[in-house]
Amino acid sequence: MRVMEYVLRAVDFAVGAAVTLFLVIAGAYSIYALWDNTQVYAAAEEIQTDMLRLKPETAQEEGASFEELLAVNPDVRAWLTLDGTEIDYPVLQGESNLSYINTDVYGDFALAGSIFLDSGCDGAFGDAYSLLYGHHMEEHRMFGDLDLYREETFFDGHSAGTLLLPDRTYELEIFACLLVPASEDAIFEPEQWRDDIEGLLEFAEGSALHIRQETVEEMRQGGAAVRILGMSTCSSEFTDARIVVLARMKPDTPET
Image 1 (cartoon, rainbow, N blue to C red):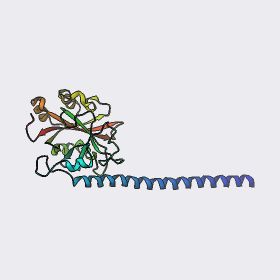
Image 2 (image 1 turned 90 degrees about the horizontal axis):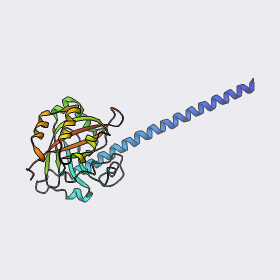
Image 3 (image 1 turned 180 degrees about the horizontal axis):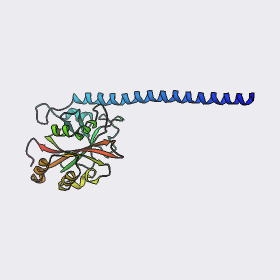
Image 4 (image 1 turned 30 degrees about the horizontal axis):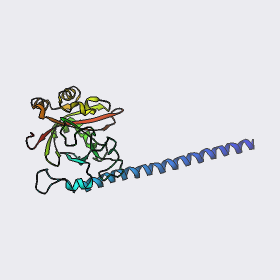
C-alpha cells in the first residue's frame, strides 16, 4: 500500500509540475506576444510619422514634388489619403504582389508591410481600374480604417480622398463598399477592366454593402476617361473575406 501511495504522490507531483511549467510557458508566451504585437504597431506608427514629413501637399504646388519620396524608394508610385480616416500613406509597387506585403517603404522586413499597387496595374494609374492592397491592422494603422466604410452612417458622411501622383492629383469619390472572398475575380483580376469598367460597375451594383448609385450613373456617362481605384484589406467576417472600397478618380485637370 505504501508503495502505491508513493507512486500516486509521485504521479500527482509530476502532473502538478507539468501543469505549472505549462502555465509558466503560456504566461511567458502571452507576454512575448503582447510585446511583439506592440512592437509591430509601434514600428508602423514610426514609419508613418517619418513618411508624413515627406508628404507632398499637391502635385502642382511650388516646391512639392516626389523627389524626396523617390530618393527613399524608387518604387513609390503615389500618396493616398482618405478623409476622415488615418489612411495617409505612400503607395508602392513591386515586381510581384509579395514584394511589399511584409516590406516597409525603406525596403526592410516589417509585418505591417506597405500600401501597394497590384503589380499587374499601370504604375502611372493609367488603367481604367487600379487596385491597392494593405494589411488590416488595429489602432487605425495601414488599411484597418477601411472597416469604417462598412457602417452606413460613416459611408454616407465620408466620400472624399486624394491620390497624389508625381505629375497630377486625383480627387477620390468613394462610391461603394463591398465584402467579397479573396477569390472574387471581378475585384482581384484588375487587368480585365483595363479598358472598360462596365462589368466592374455591374458587379458593384449587385454585391455592394453600400453604393452611391448616382456616382455609378455619372461614370457610365463619362466614357473611356473614367477611372476607378479599388482598395482591399482582410476581414474576419469569414474565411478569406476582404473589405473592398471603390472610388472614382477625378483628375484635377482634364485628361487628354
